[in-house]
Image (cartoon, rainbow, N blue to C red; front, side, top):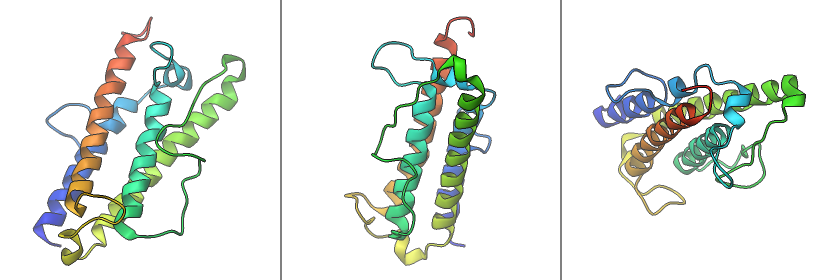
Length: 165
C-alpha cells in the first residue's frame, strides 16, 4: 500500500472510529445515544442528532460513489443531503428500531468508503474526483473532516439537551 493511501485511510478512521488526539470521533459521539435523545431538537428548524447521523451516512455514500464511479447502489432514502427524522415517544419500540437501522447505515457506508479507498490505485489518487471540483485526495480528507465537524455538533447537542448535560 502506498504512503498516501495509508495516511488517508488513517484520517478517515480517526474521524469516524479510531482514537484521535482531538477528542471524540463520530462513532464515539454517538455511543449511548437513544432514539429519543437523537430526535431532540435544540430549536425550530434545527437539525437533531439523528438527522446529522443520516447526513453523515449520505456524504460517505456520495464520496464513495465519486471515488468508484459506481451506479450500482443508491442511497436508501429519497433526496439528498438532509433527511428529516422525528420520533414519536408513543412508538418507542419502532423508533429505537429505526434509530438502530440508521446507525447501521452509517457504519455500512463507512465500511464501503474504506473499501473504495483501499482499492484505489496510486495513479487514481492523484486525479480529479468524479462529480466534484476537488481532487480525490481533497474528497477523502474532506469526508474525514466532515465526521469530526459533526462529532463536535453531536457532543454539543448532547450537552444542550435538558436533563442530560
